[in-house]
Image 1: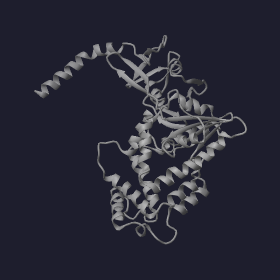
Image 2: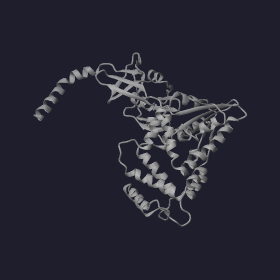
Image 3: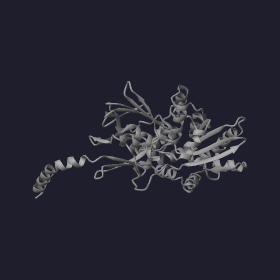
Image 4: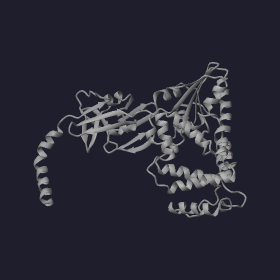
Length: 415
């Protein structure tokens, strides 16, 4: 019976081919935020399952600025920090100078330049859906992440405070307009550490010296036999020798494995809110200031007690074997940031306080030093606007940056 059914289906498909072809002749329509985009005399077309649309009407509707190089037949589209470059009959496109392969190349039809709809829309952060029956492509804006933003003013100076997450995923973008507008007003960007300088030889030498054992000892000399065996099991499962990290200090092993676990969960420091704005600043020439340094941060980790370092490592190792349908810590952080859940942010800060040594070093002491820097910005002689980006956990709670500034008599307004 199954063979008969399959045969009948094939016959039906063959018989229906002519009518299907006629159905394909129905014009494609494109809607953006519940409004149809008019394309004039040249309707969108479909080629190899890819919808191609007239470039100018489409990009202008999405808020892009458009450029055209007639000699090389190159289209450029720019919006905020996003740049897209496409060439007629070329399946390689550039997105912020990074190469991407197109399923179908842009082409010229009836003197109209047509470009791939889905590639452009999704690259710009929109969501695309397709209704085959109606031959309708619908484009909607993703809901912008709220994040945590405050504003404080003094002596004609303005400081915007953005509580960030150092690792992120695509779901955390785009950011809401208030955050982007605050950054656009800034004369300076201030971050915890300018990680774009991480490749400097001087910093590399310092990292190598402080993060690895230089006294002839190795990792097994600094942690229990049980912890070392657990580490060996995790490394072996990753396809590495059990002793691969013997030269690395305990705190650095813990940090490295934590970042690896987050990367496996599709969270990336390259997508972090901090790096997003640092990249924007480098592109526009906006000066980048540091509230701390590589040296001060790594010295803090290196100064943790032996007991705290091993405790952090054990927690990281155990997380590799935990199988739970509940959101991981970084998932919670991400969702909290997207929704701007300040109650959850405060609760997380209070959880950190349950480990006094860790809390004092990571939060309390660092916040005091960062507030001193921020107070200096507020006392600038010339009216200046600063956009300060630090980890969200630094912002709220008893020793939070917002609280400390308020205790100095400043009005800190949430944006």
